[in-house]
Length: 193
Image (cartoon, rainbow, N blue to C red; front, side):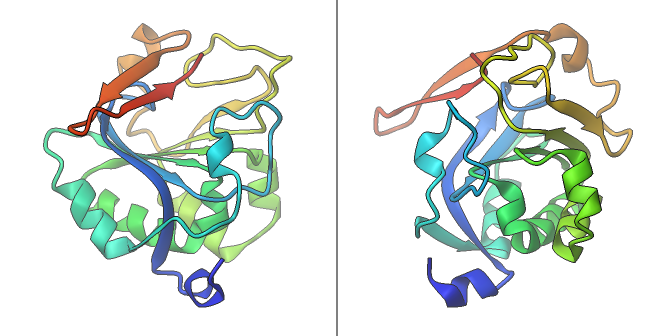
């Protein structure tokens, strides 16, 4: 990984982007997957996003403009890879998006206790800019049918009340897979199996 880019809190190493999804959190959301994860959960759905390598580096402000240009979305979801491995840049992005009225959902392999006990200023800032946290390592041997949880050990934590009573929470129980075909004919599969 380019050390200068890693040190610059304004750049995000993005693995993938989906302009509209209903499978990655409440409502219609843009999804940003980041590249690199130190957690390495066995049977991770996003194996190609685990390696820390250069992918698509974008300034947070440029990615914010891209997301804000998407019409009719309710918010953005950060996944990965591991969002907290790029906490400084994602916190800046989340703050810009929340200021524009969007909600922020984060999927992380860390537990909420791990994140808060670390007392990492960048992690704290990212948590403060999020509405919902799906926290904990994925464990294939603990299947879950609960909303947004890949395994039963994970926690769904409402950090604000903005999405706490969203109708999707009650109508989208279980797991949802979503297939999107882009203009080039590529098929993107996302969601939960």
